[in-house]
Amino acid sequence: MSDEEHQFESQADAGASKTFPQQAGTIRKNGYIVIKGRPCKVVEVSTSKTGKHGHAKCHFVAIDIFNSKKLEDIVPSSHNCDAPHVTRTDYQLIDISEDGFVSLLMENGNTKDDLRLPTDETLLAQIKDGFAEGKDLVVTVMSAMGEEQICALKDIGPK
Image 1 (cartoon, rainbow, N blue to C red):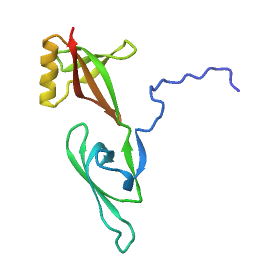
Image 2 (image 1 turned 90 degrees about the horizontal axis):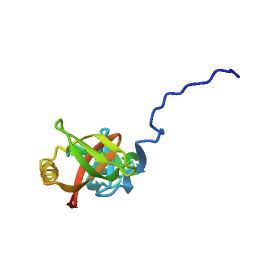
Image 3 (image 1 turned 30 degrees about the horizontal axis):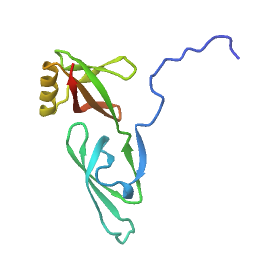
């Protein structure tokens, strides 16, 4: 054994996977699936009958949860496909900077300053208008596969 101490660089990642395997035949409408490396919400599922080679196929039509693009995939129903770990977290809005970033209050009292305003025009207008009026706003942040985006807004009354 050596006497010198080993220094490890902190990576801030516990090594947890961004996705988990799920059998294609068990994924339903409004579930989540990874298509072409993007986390998507399933809007339509159709299953074909078994053919002469024996696999029923699932046809998924899904919408990317971050950029709203429509994606499709066909997978044998007995095969596994990736499903993203999708989490939703509520944060109180503290400030909006000029460069389009928001400052959010986390549960532990720290601030989260690395999130941009949403690209959705109506949600963006609601956030800016509510903040300008001095309302207490709570934003819902959806995160999956290392990406985060504001997806909803709640008004909890005036400050």
